[in-house]
Image (tube, rainbow, N blue to C red; front, side):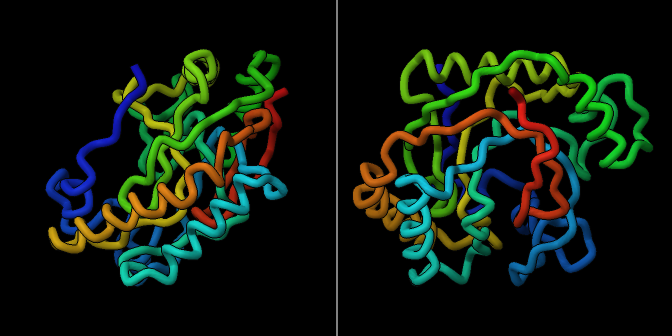
Length: 243
């Protein structure tokens, strides 16, 4: 069964969290991906992703969809990602929240830098065989900012799940919620929990945009998995193409 998103309204209003704001938002220098006013912060790590082909119909449609979000009455609640960063994460690497026993490669000391971890993981994944193509479809727009993705067919979904297992086994990185991972393409990040009426409005806008853009996005064809370094959420630099 394909994992599902939580209730959209409960998410947007913060009912699913005890935190005063979304966990990726903090005051400047306090460890978040973004500041409370939406400026990007240093948040280094590595990850296994597939970038969306910038020459594709899907990319053009994603840009148009994001442009409508940027001009909507709800734009102030989000910080938007540059289109060149649009990607779908296949398997999460390490990040500032990783620690031994949780999101950290087994057998590596916690004191390793991001680049030292990257070099170690390049050695661990060298030679593993992964699919070279992935076909996805859009299942919906969640929270006004994140496209929920799933395999275009059951076989496509199965292939992606098996790819995640192969990368988990090779890297030694495990997650308590590994089986619950939802594939997605992020267009923006929510900056604050919103009132109920605002959440309902964002959800309604998302439904309208899906009617307009779902067919225009169409099936999303992704190439080989890219192992990338990142210093922030605006750019993901490939260090190894998983061929």
